[in-house]
Image (tube, rainbow, N blue to C red; front, side):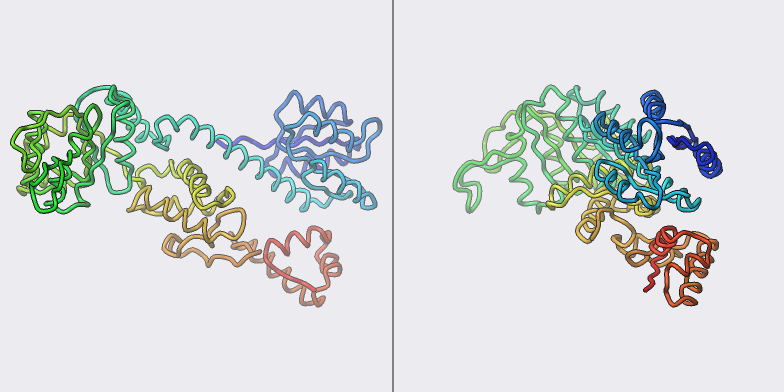
Length: 454
C-alpha cells in the first residue's frame, strides 16, 4: 500500500489553512498545520513531511527566515512559498536558496493541487530511487540483480554450492546470466585465487575446439611450432567453465568425460597424459534430457556434469525485478557511453514490464542502451523505445510538450481549452477569465496538453 503523502502548511491565516486542508485532504493528502515559523520548524524536526507550504509574511519569523534555517540544516522536503502577487520577487529569491516553487495568494485550488502533486511525486520518485540504489548496493556482492523469490533462490543456491568442489550444471535461456552465476560460484569457492577459464563450446569449430581444450605439442600438425597448453591445463587450481555444453560434438563429449572421470588430458600429438586439477562448471540453454533420448548428448557425461543444478529463470518470470535491473544497467550504460545518469518515466517502466523479453536481460540491456543514446532529455520515456515494445492499442507516442489522454475527462478539458483559445484569438488573460481560472493555472494546462497561444 502506497503511504499517504504528508503536507505541512505553515501560515498564520486560519482561513487559508482550512482551505488548504480541505482541498488537499479531499485529494488524499494528510495535512499538518503550524501557525508560525518556530512551530513549523518543530513539526519538521519531529515528523515525516513530504511537502511544505510556507507563507512568506508571518509575524515573528518570516517564511524566508524559516527557509534559510532549513537551508542551513539541510535535507528538507520541497518547500512551496505562498506570497502576495506584489511580493513575487521575494519568492523568486527564495527559490534561489532552495524553495521548490511558489504560489500567489489568494491561491487557486487547481493550481495548488497541481503544484503539490508534482512536488509529492518528485519526493516519491527520489525515495524509490534511493531504495533501489540501496538494494543494488546490497546485491553487488553477488552481482545477481533482483529481489524476486526466483532470484533469491538462485542466490541461496550459489551460497550453498559455491564453497563445494562439486561439478555444477547451470540451465537457462540465452541472456539470463549463466556466465555471471559461474563467475560467482568460482569467487565463493576455495579456488577463488586460481583462474576462471571460460570456453564457449558453440563459438569454435570442432577441430579448433579440441586443440583449445586439450592443447597440443610441437609438430602435432602443420603450424604447431611449439607446445601449447589447453584450457584444462590453464585452469589448473581454478575453475573451467564450459559454456553452451549442449553444442559439443559427440566425439569431444567422450574425451571430456574421460577428463572428468580420470582427471587427465592428452594434448594433441602427445604421448603422455597430463594431470589436471580443476573444478567443472557447465552451462546450456538446450534440453539435455531430450538430446540424450535423441542420441545427441551422452547420458554418462550429463550425470557427471549435473552433480548440482542451478536453473536461472527467464526475465518474463521475474518481471518484478525489472526496476532494479533498469537502475543497475542504466548506471552502467551511462558510464560506458559517457552520458550523464538518466532516470526513466513510469510509462517507460510499464512498457518494459509488458514485454515478453525472449532475449532476457541481454535484450533489456540492449534496449536500454538504444534508448539512452536516442534520449534527448533527462528522462527516458515512451518516445525513446522501439515500436515493438509499445503494446498493441496504445495511443500514439505524444510529441514533445504533450501528454497522452488517460480518460475522457482530460479529452473534454483539452477541447474546452482549444475552443476558448480560438474564441479569444489565443489571448491568455481573456481565456483564463472566461474559464474562471488563474493565468498561471492556464499556463500549466496549456503545457500539459501541448497547446500554444499567442
